[in-house]
Image 1 (cartoon, rainbow, N blue to C red):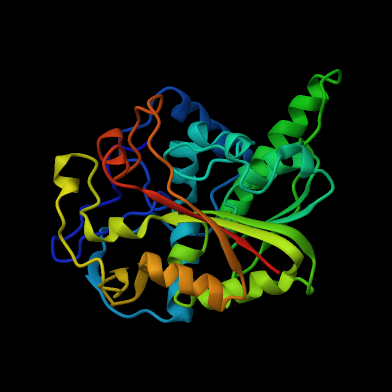
Image 2 (tube, helix red, strand yellow):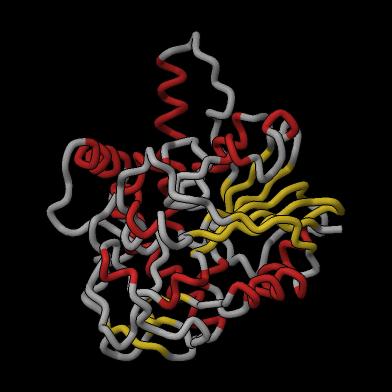
Length: 334
């Protein structure tokens, strides 16, 4: 996990930090990281996404639906390689982790008992390299992994190819969950599925922190779920917005208003957004869920476990033992 953010943030615009944003600092490639770099390079040539962003200017300003979506897609396409290299070991190839604390769905059962997932149609939103979808497939579910970023989905293809190759090399092994996961590149606010296509939907830090209109996303998820379906999603805990994105003691002092909903924006020299994150208070999130047509049945704030001694950007044992870092909303479509 990274020990530094992608770049320093100006004090005037403290960044709340999303775990998706944090990529490794230069020179941090060691051990397993170097092995993963070789795998990525050998599997496919880099896409036409350009180099990671030069140091952008951080500010607070409005960013609409179109600008936010464009910035997110571009940022992920340029930074997906570094993200998967740095966090691939923690995320695994087929592990369902809800956030930097390490809460695992196999223990949390927020989507329901694993034995009841078999045969369920599940949509994963903001799937990245589809790690959660592979875990779902291994339980007998029929997942579809959706992401805005083409490069992230290329990593999903890479992992699937590696796993299928490993099964073929060891024909005696059980290959449940190792076939390729269906992948879809699309915006979370315009899901390309018919009404009532899924029994469950999930999103581990995908989409919702980065969209300008979360109710639009929630309504579309509601549309594609069948009656009685459940949508579970995790986001940065809203209280983090008020604190600097630092893992040490400096990240424990309030530096901004919790009630300031002005988006955090990183922009290039032409003023074009290259990264956008939107803040909603805890009350806002609850109201968004209701406005999206859902009933909120649980709100989980994972505690930092003793076994997790690593840092992930601004997430750390120090902060995690004092303030919540993740909020998980469990919603039902009646």
